[in-house]
Amino acid sequence: MEPLIVLIAGSLAARLAGLAGMDALDGWHPALRAGLALMFLLTASAHFHPKLRPDMIGMVPPALPRPDLLVTATGVLELSGAVGLLIPATAWWAAGGLALLMIAMYPANYSAAKRQVAQGDPIGMRTVLQLVFIGAAVAIMAF
Image 1 (cartoon, helix red, strand yellow):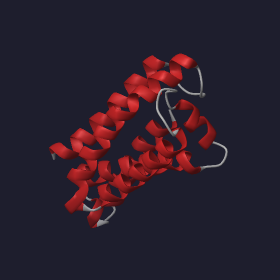
Image 2 (image 1 turned 90 degrees about the vertical axis):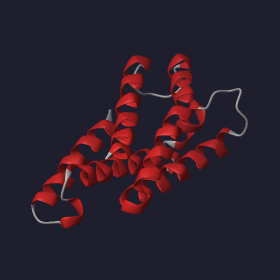
Image 3 (image 1 turned 180 degrees about the vertical axis):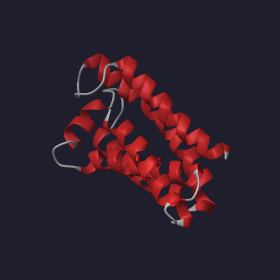
Image 4 (image 1 turned 90 degrees about the horizontal axis):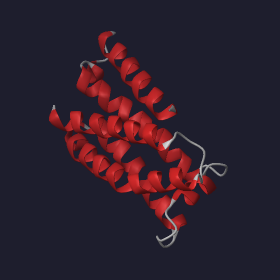
């Protein structure tokens, strides 16, 4: 649920900054890009945080090799995507890549919920949140 709060609060704060005169954030499109970037900075940090990383590794389906490497790779991709969202020239590509990444990572979320490996939202809520985040990325691509 924290990522949703960061997405909403970050987008609103960015929009308010735009209204207050920060030209780079003047409009809902750049505000949404900033909010989604903040959300991915939050989620990427879990891939590297010493207390959260073991849970992230545990979420990887057992059939996949090198869960530690997969967690590192997805964290780097999330960080790269967050930066890409903040650069207007790369935002479309970053949003598309992040949408694909979220689709690719959904089985890990599903597997973790079914195996009750990591704390978090039940599968129904995870699915809804994932769709909201993918929708935000697609909305960025649509502008």
